[in-house]
Amino acid sequence: MPTMTVDLSAIKDNARAVKTILNGAKLCAMVKADAYGHGIAETAAALRDTADCFGVAAAREAFLLRDGGVDCDILVVAPVEERAAREAVRRGLILTVACGGDLDLTERAARAERKPARVHIKADTGMRRLGVDNIAEFESILRRAARSEWMRVEGVFTHYATSDTGGEYLEYQYGRFAEFLAAARRAAGEGLCGDLARHGACSGAILRGRRYHMDMARAGLLLYGCCPSPDLADTVELRPAMRVTAGIAQLKRCRKGDAVGYGNAYVCPRDCLLAAARIGYGDGYMRSLSNRGFGSARGVRCPVVGNVCMDTTLFDVTNVTNIGYTDTVTVLGDGVTADELARACGTISYEILTSFHGARVKREYKRELRIEK
Image 1 (cartoon, rainbow, N blue to C red):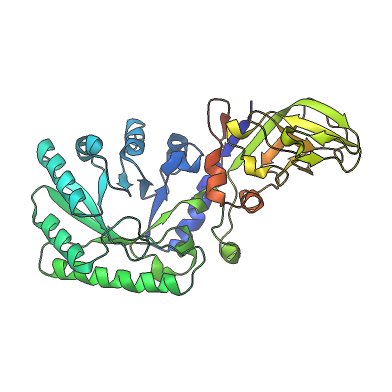
Image 2: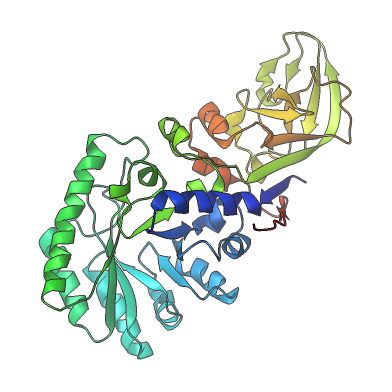
């Protein structure tokens, strides 16, 4: 069984580093997708003294937090499903309105609960995914929501498509968002709503400058110790929080010319020693790492050889001195980074972190006791 070890002190330290960069702007800690694979309940507990609110993608994730005793603000960044809308209103979640239909659904749920819904209105400034992309429509939705006795408009936000890479399109979206904010100010100036929280920065934009921070920033990847872009790596000191290891099922000596694994995808170029590690794509170790990935055993890098199987992956451990069945292969951590694995198989670090899943991956938590000075 593979073991994932999550260092909660690293997540805390990363959050503090982000908080320092924000310099007064609020921190919305994104814990969607089970806290990027790190465990939503444990991560939220670790961040309770640092995060100003939590961000999730689905109401059911927010319900898990509420059930676990999280009573601070929780922002659901995607439109809520109708079946969850009433409970979301009842439990005081901040809901996203991304179109007129969302406004209708949320207002119905609030009226049924006899409780005003807390909402942030999302502007689509160029992501082309969710949000109102027309300023006149945005202003109309905002005004209608502000006039409703069952809606409490608390914020407006957007999402940047190229904050990882920066460039002209990020500047275009930033300027476009300013136009939406002007519409919000008009409504506020007429007394339809109070001060609205403005936010657009995710991890990449957080590192690209204070002007993107506004009133709040939504940090995700940074909290878990990964930088969204190589050109930003020197702007913040982070500690990866996740380590994944697998035991060794068998050590096998192979001769030069021996074919290895399904499809004979690898032929040994020399006599070698292979370790069959107890992890495969059934545990989230991607098959695209076949003949491209690498692990670490006793501090020595070991390449993946052959095709990754559902339950087992073969590593070349020829250069590892005195390796035995009590050793493990580290597939993430100990110098094997999510960024490197992502490059090896043509994906992004987000997918690497969220891929380890299922009943066979044992999750443990490292809680470092620190004495604050």
